[in-house]
Length: 242
Image 1 (cartoon, rainbow, N blue to C red):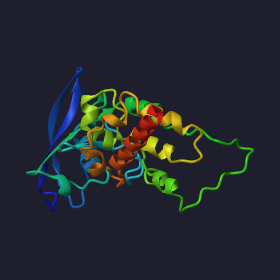
Image 2: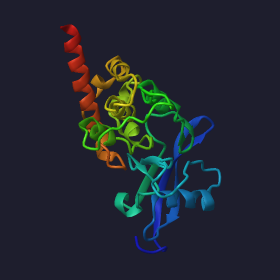
Image 3: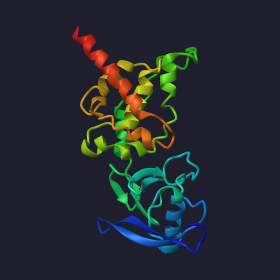
Image 4: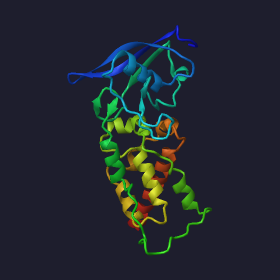
């Protein structure tokens, strides 16, 4: 796959009259071609009605995430030669989210869970108070910093089999954010976050399969964050029991 004389067989998920199906296109292959390049070529040269979502093209926004040969990926950073199977590609919308059209999903369920898990920061001080100093070597700060680079692309959410089988499960991104907040000494109600993630749909639902960590494009570790929440909520449970 090193010149334009080679074609890729690309199956793309389409929505037609309220139903979904795969439509196959022949796409010219090029060196250093990304999956987003392939999708863009189809929209620009084969079918202008193809609907998909992207913005930055450089792995900063996460909006171009799609299922590629069965795995969720940022399409702008995924090179064809890394995922091509028998000269074929299968591209679909992210799993575990409602499909709006073609490759575009409705992100509302993902963000609703992110908020409900305690993702919003509640300050301990007002803007009139001096800024609280947190030392860089602080253990809790290190735990909070570990997940701060999450950009809410929903790759981990699409990768999670627990989400697929339990609509109430908050999911890896929301729980990683909750762990960040629990370890943020500037957050005003960390106990409320622990109460939320220990309830139905919370961290104890995680089966520790690790797809979220294995597929995170930013190299984050939601699985370890969820494990931290499990330990914290269990300590809370036994403490209250005494």
